[in-house]
Image (cartoon, rainbow over all chains, first blue to last red; front, side, top):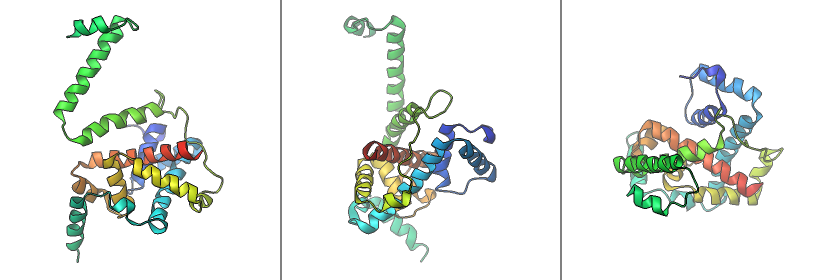
Length: 88
Length: 143
C-alpha cells in the first residue's frame, strides 16, 4: 500500500470519489487533506465533483424528473423496491 | 497471419513497435474473451482515459481548471445545468446507472453492486469513472 503522506494526484482523484460514497479511514482522510493543501488542481477536482453532485440533484428538481430515472433498467428499479420493502 | 499483415504494414514504425502492437492486441483479445461481461470492457477503456490524464509520476497533465469564482452561481445558471444534463446523458450506460443510483436514489455502494451485478471494487471504479467523465465533459463544454 502507498504511504498516505505521499499520495499522488491519480490516487487522490480516486479517493476523492470514494470519500463521497463512504467514510474513509482517518489516515487516508489526513493524507488527502495534506495533499489538497499543496495541490490546487486536486482541490479544484474535489470542489467540482461536489458541484456536479449538487447539480445532479438540482436537475432532478428543476428539469423533468424522469429523464435519468427512465434510464435505469426496470430490473434495477424492481430490485431497489424489493430492497426497500424489506425495511418496511 | 502476422507475416501477411506485415506485407500491409507500411514500415512507418520499427519491427519492434510492430511486434509490440501485435502483442498488445493479443492481450486485449485474450481479456475480451475471458471476460464477456460488458463491465470489463468498460474497465479497459476506463484505465486508458484516466491513465492519459496523468503523467508517469501520477500528476495531472493539464489539471482541472477553476470554473467560476462562485460555484453557487453556476448552480443557478440554466446553461450550466443543460451541460450537466447533456453530459449525464452521454455517459456510458453502466457508469450512468451507477451514478444515478448513487446521486438520485441515494443508494449505498453495497446496493449498487448488487443491482448492477458487479463487485465492490468495480463499483468504486465505475463511480469514480462516472464522476471523472462528467467533470471532463462539463469542462470541455463549459469553458
